[in-house]
Amino acid sequence: MHHCHEQNVRAFRAVTTISLPLDSLEAIFDNVQDYPKWQESVKESKVVHRTSDSKYHFYTRNHQGWPAKDRDLMWAVEKTWDENTNSLLYDQVCSTNTLPEKNNPGVVSQAFVTWRLQPISETETKISYNFTIQQGGRIPNWLLSMLSAEAPYKTLANLKNQEVLGDGNTASLD
Image (tube, rainbow, N blue to C red):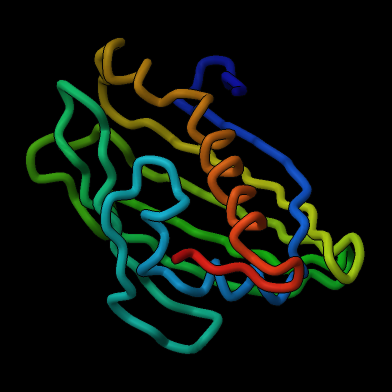
C-alpha cells in the first residue's frame, strides 16, 4: 500500500504469475458475471452497457464488511493491447461524478484499476493488479481502515486458484 503525502489517495499493487495462457485469462476477465467467484468482496456483477468487446460498463455490488453497507459501483472499462510491454490491459474507472453516492456524498471521488496480463510463455502469464482510490470528503478512520491492503492479494490468490480448476491450458470458474 502506498500513501501519497498530503493527498487523500491510497494505492495498492499486487503481482503474481499464473499457470494459464493469456487467452484463458482473457476469457475469465471478459466473463464479468463470474467476478464474484474470484474478486475479493464482489458479491454481484453484470455488464450494463457494451459499446464493443473492448469498451463496456459493468455494475458491481461490493461487500464492505460490518458496520458498512454493501456498495453499488459502476465501472467503465477499456481493454487494450500495449505494444511496448506485450501486455493485455484492462483499465477500469469508477467515479462518483457518474454514479453519485446517495447516502454518503463525497466519500469516494474516483477509483482506478489496471490489470496487466503479460504472457511469459505459452502456458504462463504474469498478472499485475494496480488499484488507486482518490478519497473525497471526510472519511472516518474505521472506514478508511477497511480499505485493506490484503484485498488485492486475496483477489490474486482467488484467481491463481483458477489454474487448479483448469486442465493446464484453460480454466473454468465452475
